[in-house]
Each structure stands twice: as C-alpha cells, then as structure tokens.
Length: 126
Image (cartoon, rainbow, N blue to C red):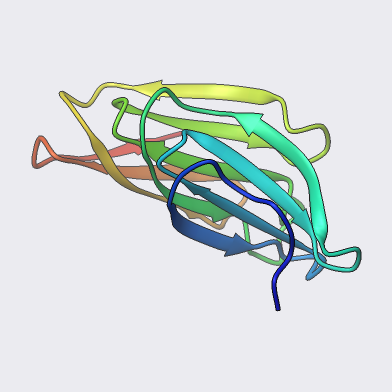
C-alpha cells in the first residue's frame, strides 16, 4: 500500500515505532519522515543529517524509555538522538572518523547507544 509522497531521493532504511502507529523512514535526502500509518500520510519531516542516513532505531524495550527516542546514523559522520514527543534533537554523537554505518539502542534503564563506523570502530555512548 502506497502511503503518499515521500522522500526526494531513495529510501535506505525504515523502522516501526513501538506504538505500532508510526513508521520512520530515511535515506539519501538526509531527511527522516515520520508516517502516521492510520492516516497513511507523513506526520513529521525532520531535516536530520547533511548526507545519507544509514540506519534508524527506536527504543523498543519494556522500560520507561520505550519509544521515547529515535536514533539515526549517517554518512555525515554523526549519530543523532531524537525525542519522539516533539521530534527535537536531543544529542549529536560525534567521534567517528568518517561515515557512521549503523546505530542501535541498548534497551535498558541506562539507554546506551552503540554506533559503528567506516573507520572500523564501534563506539558505546551513555
């Protein structure tokens, strides 16, 4: 089922929200789109990165943090953490030498984040 007009360029990644009603998509245009699956249209568009977005992850645990954060990684050399309440940037994770290829959230009360880079390193952020 087509949801409507989306990204200006290719979509590289997607992630369902734990609430089951939203889908985040991202790709070549550096934008994250949040789709309302009930209404079948975008509910937010976030100018997130200056280059390709490689991965998206929502916090998915049963902890009090579940679904409150969305993490993104990009060829612009950063990982970013977004609030799902208002889609505002909470934190920028810088430290890789080059492209950040992936990101994940350790679903625990500490809500740690791991990034992996083209520089052959993994970084754990708390």
